[in-house]
Amino acid sequence: MEAFLCTDDLCRQFGGVTATDCVCIDIEESGLRSIIGPNGAGKTTFINIITGRIPASSGKVFFQGSDITNKPTHELVRMGICRTFQITSIFQNLTVFENVRIARQAHKGGSLKIFSTKRSLKNVSVDTWDILERLGLQDQAHQEAKNLAYGDQRVLEVAIAMAGSPQILFLDEPTAGMSPGETNHISRLIRGLAEEISIVLVEHDMDLVMSISDRITVLHYGSIIAEGLPEEIKTHQMVREAYLGKDA
Amino acid sequence: MMSDITSIPGDRPSAAPIKIFGFAAIFLALAILPFVWDNRFYISLITQIMIYGLLAMSLDVLLGYTGLLSFMHNAYLGIGAYMVGLFLIHVSPTSLWLACLVGVIFTGAVALPVGWVQVRTGGLAFALLTLAFGMMFHTIVWKWYSVTGGDDGLMGVPSPDIQLFRWTVGNTGDPTHIYLLTLVVVAICFVLTRRIIRSPFGAVLEAIRENEERAAFVGINVRRYKLYGWMLACILAGIAGALFILYKGYIGPTTMSAFAGAGVLMMVLLGGMGSLWGPLIGAGIFIYIQDYITTMTEHWEIYLGLVVILLVLFMPTGFVGMGSYLKRMRRN
Image 1 (cartoon, rainbow over the protein chains, first blue to last red):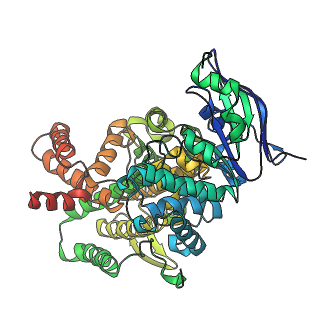
Image 2 (cartoon, each protein chain N blue to C red):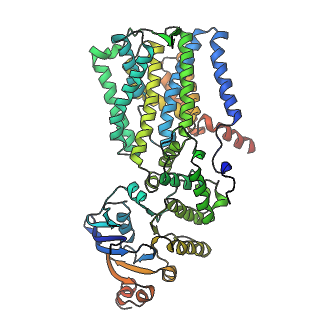
Image 3 (cartoon, chains in turn blue, yellow):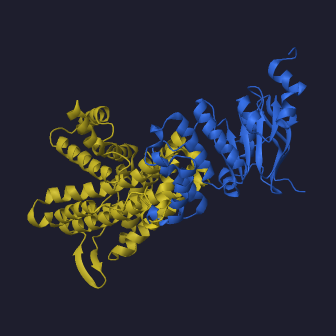
């Protein structure tokens, strides 16, 4: 059977440092895959390569059977590969509504209608409201994104990514800097999404990872050292060593 | 939830009646001005303001909406102006519209490969490339004596009649006629550009201005849309160039210098970028101050520089931002 998304000996060097070292991964069509590892393990670099933010040094990425290695970002997004960023990346001076609306428009088309009004793209506006409601952002729709509370900005980032109707969504530390209440809100959201699409989560919060992941992949010095169900990873000897040192 | 699809909130309604009324009032006032105020000097000055206003507005499309800085947008006014002038001199001295069409298309044809190179970069690199290309164009028109007249400029450009369908409605050599032609063309360009900026296409440009990487990660082909924005700005500049040569009957290489380019940038900043009408006001302030100071001293650049420094320090959002600035002052 053909894999949904997989990498084949994917490598990336920065100068002499190998940040991603011959990684082969298979990701399922739905469900929640977490990628964990100590600081500097190469988690973000790995998803940066897949999502087209930085080119691979060698190796391949396949999505639904076709080679997508080093394709331009916007083409990957059109294929349904979306992501969020570790450092919040939103359209600061646009309203929350406009943030999601432009992402939806980019997905649905109509960007070349130079003499039409924005509201003439009715489907885009309707979809945008659906997404805002689903994520609980509808009350802030008309605020400028920069005026949102930090936690809400993180949620907005997910909303923008969802507007691309992703088939696979990469979330880079979505809960970083969030309060427990906000973390709870977003983790329920992520879990819900994972029933429909494939989610790849890079996360430091171990409690969160262990409670919501279907499968976990552990990276250490750019290579996969373990992969399995949460219970398997919890007791995995090499994982414990990677996190706590050899004597643990 | 959304039972009434026709009233989806979140989009600004298209132009409010008061704005349309305001625009129409200003247009009409300017249209009757030359008939009630017989001061040829000021009519001519306002013509110049409108032409540079159009150029500054076109730069605002780049700077205020796409987030790209062009140091020498005047180069594209110059290219349009030279081409229209050359066409009138060498091909047909009476074909006004054809000359303008050729000039604007030629401007676009030059801007396309330049833009293709420039959009591969962003930020400071983009700005430096505009300077590099602009200086090349400046040097070409300055040194290519046999075609452009070198530093003497392009002289003896004929003044064609303004023909609408079969009727001759005026002559571009008449200050009042060229004033009215400029007013109509600038007004049309303003309305069309405003419409474009508020379209789904304009929303893409704004997204690129706000966050280029994010724009790419929602599926926007950033380079392509930057190029579209660039072409729109350059074609508007080319239209301004066509008006310029018809108005002056002459163009010299200094119009395309980096110094003049900085002036256009100042117009945008003085007026306030990201509003389209701000740069039109900015052009008015700039050219009026320049003209006023010139009557007292020939070193007008020094005093204009001081005025600009003060305005940038104390009115960083330009004329457009003055409303909210005054409100804040009153509250304190």
